[in-house]
Length: 401
Image (tube, rainbow, N blue to C red; front, side, top):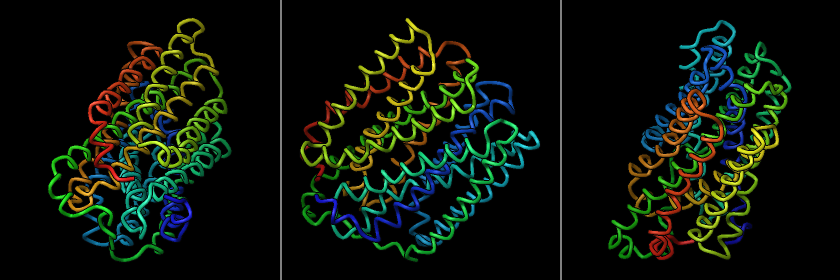
């Protein structure tokens, strides 16, 4: 399970494409919630805007494998990039002219782009000659580039709400880059199928187990996204309510993005020493404790910049470990590889989590307070923790590392 085997052109092209897509995601995050809030004059309007991205991600995630099998990788990701370009241009136009419904539609398009881009972390494993967690994790860790670049661009060219339209033009430019790089992908989807170390007889005998573990990976991804999005979408709104500057808010988002992707490099290292089930359980327990400490601090000190920063860092790290482990469970699962339809179904779970977290954040901020969000985030982490404890033996026995 050496990183050297994963340093190749297959990994590089998917890593660059994923870095571009996450630059778009982090740039959108920096301004979209506040753009929606300004267009609708409500917190719920801000989080609904981000939920539209989640709906688009569901469409892209659900249809991704079918589209790839139908028209090939190159055409699929060329279409995806075109949607990103159209989204950037229409978002810019709608923000300038206060057109909320067009703005929402444009976010749906960029969500489809993001949903299709999420397959990069799985396709790199499918097409790899040597199966390794490093294949998936090197693609995921390339998101660090986007975590830094997206918010930095937003801060440089759109420091105030009246300039947000410029940031969406940058989204269109990233779409052009993605379109160019999509031409480096093969025309056909050629998969190096199941891990050769697994006997076909063992796979067929345990189809039910592999299917349940595939859905467990989806559940872990869902809960990781709910927890992360609850905090991620509510912090900019809470910071705005507390009269923090646009620069401070961009810094919060930027640190959150770094916290999402920098720890991912540790996951395969830890998985080389411990099984992924142990890595996930430890990360969930530590994260729950950290959130509860944050809730206690907010109760006593109120939500100042430093506490909001801590919450964003914890939420990012939660996502890093949860989504990375979930991705590895899904990527190597023989059932998902042999039946792409079911892989497409579980790929819907993370964007469903994004929508759930976004809408809950808007509703809670309207009727409760930020501290309630932190407590709810902790409760959502209990779900994958309990399920992982329940299925720990199956994960150890049937998930090859």
